[in-house]
Image 1 (cartoon, rainbow over the protein chains, first blue to last red):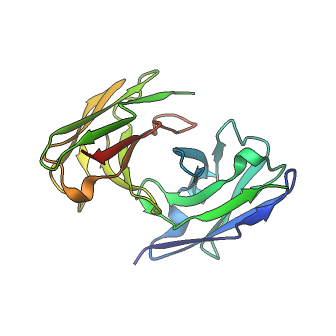
Image 2: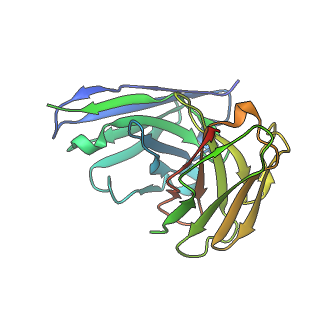
Length: 116
Length: 107
């Protein structure tokens, strides 16, 4: 059974940092690109970024809204992807999903709240 | 960035109705488009990939069509479990972009 389990969400002050983790199981994680998608409460889906596999040089891509503040990484030995979020803003408050979009694998989401 | 414009933003329909949702891309995305269904409190689930290919396990009442800049998701006979929000996603170029969503409500 495929599972993606996000963790690391919580409350952080504006300007702060947070790192989300996405633990994968049930599929060949090392061969899959991993994406992060977020959704503010009552709003639509927003693609945040992705990291490709080692075979594709771990290439990353980001939405303009997070470029330069967020960094996606992965540790294939741990079957885990990460989303490092720096210089957080109130508008980054959202549920963050990790996903293998090619395969349509999704986690349950991790809630990030940026508030003073 | 490619903008995806979905219409309508919401609709009310009855069980058994035929429902059509449209997604328009600001520039051509070939057929690199998926359709997703999301229910409250749940992660999205893909219905269609490659604009017209039915995801495994998805009922055949769902269909997708289009290419380039105009795409359509059709539900041929709306069922109670289909009341949800639907999104298109273009994956032709980065950043990938979602449409703003269409909420399908019970009439």
